[in-house]
Image (cartoon, rainbow, N blue to C red; front, top):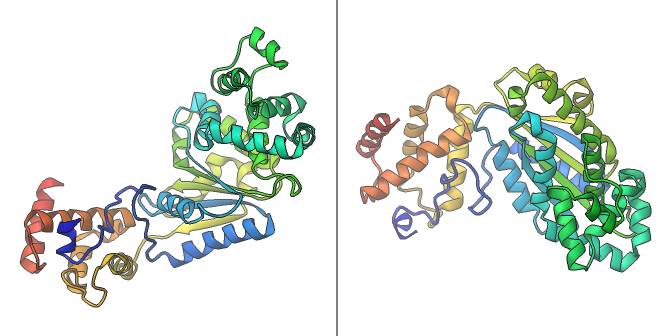
Length: 363
């Protein structure tokens, strides 16, 4: 931190080659994307809308950053539950991985506390009546059991979600079966998500669900991605209100038809909006870089040592086809490390050229 202060920076704004919720998340440029996502949140929060949004664009274009930024930005929003997962990697186990990733993100402890609070305040019968049309009576009962104060029941329900129970254990809980099929999983997930939405009487919430890296579906066997597409479609259809789903796809320009092919017509037809992360122009790249530097400068009036000429030199070094937030971050992060390593106070053409020479050797 002290070294950064010597070059007029409070923090390194280019540190996140890949984003992290624990670091400073500063939005720069991409004003159209930010506006569209903000409006989707506003509509969900204010109007209880259901939206299915496809975010797509080039590798390193800012889709994961968008998810992390808005999860952090909206973290204090009342009764708003975020879910963020990455697309399952193993197509043959996609539904199981999808199910467990959602439970992991929310956490069993939070599920227990939330369901327990609903039951204590409004009664188990009210929750059962709400969940039964969504999840079936059997799984509505299981979801209610997650909110139990009994430690033994709590431990059994944790195992019920992750590994399943023996017939004896199911009988002890008064349950007829485990979660066995894809259909069972979706019924149960729809019920869990609906607990964080409610019906406006016992609870009035919103759920925003980000599924990242959905381009991994390309590597699924045909039968697997068709099956997982069905899972997505069924989940979308099971929740009717106060639900915002973002699907992040990394694909080259002009490949929207590929996404449609992978998702299948049924899911594609349910997409309510497509947000495209367009390739940066040089002007976009410069605005992006300067806005990040502006947010992190100690002395806002002094652009040194990262003045416009330095920014132009770095951006001109990056191939035009690679002008994405990730590549820009990668190069400026490297330059900052080089400046600190060489204890430089001034960044001039000679220093930048020295950095470029070293960068070329290492990359």
